[in-house]
Amino acid sequence: MKINYYPDTDSLYIDLSSKPSADSLEVSEGIVLDFDSEGNIVGIDIDNAESKLNLHELILNKLPLQKQIINA
Image: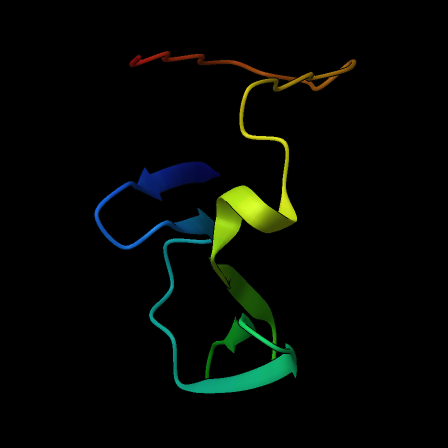
Protein backbone atom coordinates (compact mmCIF):
# COMPACT_ATOMS: atom_id res chain seq x y z
CA MET A 1 0.00 0.00 0.00
CA LYS A 2 1.26 3.47 -0.86
CA ILE A 3 -0.09 6.87 0.15
CA ASN A 4 0.89 9.84 -2.02
CA TYR A 5 -0.01 13.48 -1.44
CA TYR A 6 0.27 15.97 -4.30
CA PRO A 7 0.38 19.52 -2.83
CA ASP A 8 0.11 21.24 -6.23
CA THR A 9 -3.37 19.74 -6.72
CA ASP A 10 -4.17 19.10 -3.02
CA SER A 11 -5.01 15.49 -3.80
CA LEU A 12 -4.23 12.31 -1.92
CA TYR A 13 -4.01 8.93 -3.62
CA ILE A 14 -4.00 5.67 -1.69
CA ASP A 15 -2.64 2.80 -3.78
CA LEU A 16 -4.09 -0.41 -2.38
CA SER A 17 -2.79 -2.75 -5.06
CA SER A 18 -0.23 -2.87 -7.86
CA LYS A 19 -2.96 -3.96 -10.29
CA PRO A 20 -4.00 -1.34 -12.86
CA SER A 21 -7.28 0.52 -12.57
CA ALA A 22 -9.96 -0.55 -15.06
CA ASP A 23 -12.94 1.38 -13.71
CA SER A 24 -13.70 4.24 -11.31
CA LEU A 25 -16.65 5.35 -9.23
CA GLU A 26 -17.10 8.72 -7.52
CA VAL A 27 -18.69 7.80 -4.18
CA SER A 28 -18.79 11.33 -2.78
CA GLU A 29 -17.84 14.73 -4.15
CA GLY A 30 -14.12 14.53 -4.89
CA ILE A 31 -13.68 10.96 -3.63
CA VAL A 32 -13.12 8.34 -6.32
CA LEU A 33 -12.63 4.60 -5.90
CA ASP A 34 -10.61 2.78 -8.54
CA PHE A 35 -11.28 -0.87 -9.37
CA ASP A 36 -9.33 -3.52 -11.27
CA SER A 37 -10.84 -5.62 -14.08
CA GLU A 38 -12.19 -8.12 -11.52
CA GLY A 39 -14.01 -5.44 -9.50
CA ASN A 40 -11.53 -5.30 -6.61
CA ILE A 41 -10.71 -1.88 -5.19
CA VAL A 42 -7.15 -0.86 -6.09
CA GLY A 43 -7.05 2.80 -5.11
CA ILE A 44 -8.74 5.80 -3.53
CA ASP A 45 -8.35 9.32 -4.92
CA ILE A 46 -9.30 12.25 -2.66
CA ASP A 47 -9.47 15.78 -4.12
CA ASN A 48 -9.20 18.83 -1.82
CA ALA A 49 -7.59 16.51 0.70
CA GLU A 50 -6.56 19.16 3.23
CA SER A 51 -10.17 20.22 3.75
CA LYS A 52 -11.38 16.60 4.09
CA LEU A 53 -8.56 14.96 6.06
CA ASN A 54 -6.10 15.66 8.84
CA LEU A 55 -2.89 15.38 6.83
CA HIS A 56 -0.71 16.29 9.81
CA GLU A 57 -1.01 12.92 11.52
CA LEU A 58 -0.82 9.28 10.42
CA ILE A 59 -1.30 6.49 12.93
CA LEU A 60 -0.65 2.87 11.99
CA ASN A 61 -1.85 0.26 14.47
CA LYS A 62 -0.76 -3.37 14.54
CA LEU A 63 -0.19 -3.74 10.81
CA PRO A 64 1.77 -6.87 9.89
CA LEU A 65 4.40 -4.82 8.07
CA GLN A 66 7.44 -6.47 6.56
CA LYS A 67 8.70 -3.24 5.04
CA GLN A 68 8.21 0.36 6.15
CA ILE A 69 9.51 3.32 4.16
CA ILE A 70 8.94 6.88 5.32
CA ASN A 71 9.70 9.77 2.96
CA ALA A 72 8.96 13.15 4.45
